[in-house]
Length: 464
Image 1 (tube, rainbow, N blue to C red):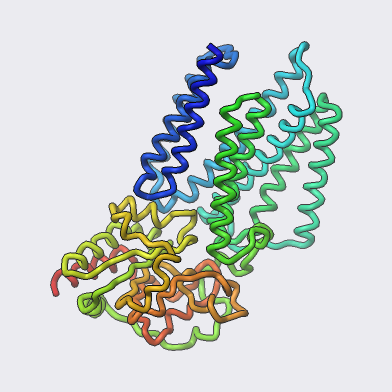
Image 2: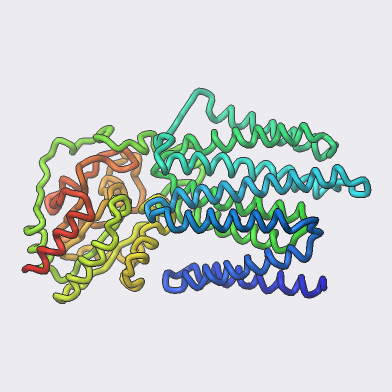
């Protein structure tokens, strides 16, 4: 029986690995998700037979309640709310790891014949520490994305020294627990300090850095799960947690590279004006005139083009305009225009946000181009159509050393022959600065809600 359990665990681990591999491409992502889900299902089922389960009633009740909540969230949460949902689920994972570590510790303490060895006590402390930080940190990330908590960088006196003192307090308390595992009060202190640390570590991170924060918290939840696997001596949980932790760290570093920022810069709180949604905090171009077009004029520009690149941003997600954008691309292709989509790695509120939205709208995967694959071709683009994107197309990142986004790789849309920007207004993005692109000689503003404005544009193109 034990051999069969280990074989199922091994098979589930292989499914996890292949699942993550398939997630590397939009074409195979759904298949990868299914493989990983199957692996997790097998792991859960076989774990129920592997462990000493006193009663299945509570497990069945938990499965039913959890499945119902999951189904409701999946059906009710809009695609624009997916980053918030991911952040919340990261928190649930971290909280679950901390609670399981506490439960196992309590079980060991009340069992006369079982003693806490060195490795178990260390992993219990780490699981509670990382899980608690992940829980409250993810709740703050959720709050920022949901605009319950300010999206701006929050700074306060002695911010970094306080975090260092709290972290050292956790380490010292953790050492005391390892030396004397019977001190449950010390574990409670570790949990409380870790919960506070989660808030203090994520609160200074601005809204513009939320994609990186979400990736990092995802990694934390995986590491916490892996630590809990050591506590439970469950190889499957160790492997699954390690995979999530490693992939989360890799994705975090990729996101940082996409913003030309160091991970430390993001974690310590980056753009001071991040999250502001009104006029620019400072700009040397904000008083320049802008040129605008209506739907009919924009349609005429599209009709005369041969190569069009559409750049989606969070504004497209807010307006739920991905289907209208797909309709525009289809209409343009019918009249012989080559249409591609340029995706910046940090566009939106979580990694791959724009890819997910466009995939939902049934946009062909081979039309989606990453920044490094399309940036050199903007000189050959007749019309670059920006839908709700802002900081990721701001030319200030290339030359303005005083700009907070200086050095961040951007999409070179300003090199196109004509740039049409669809936004509701000239308001700034999450970096809190004015966008030089709006005032460019080859830029035309097409004001309006993305969904309504693009629907009108599609109608005008059809009537040409």
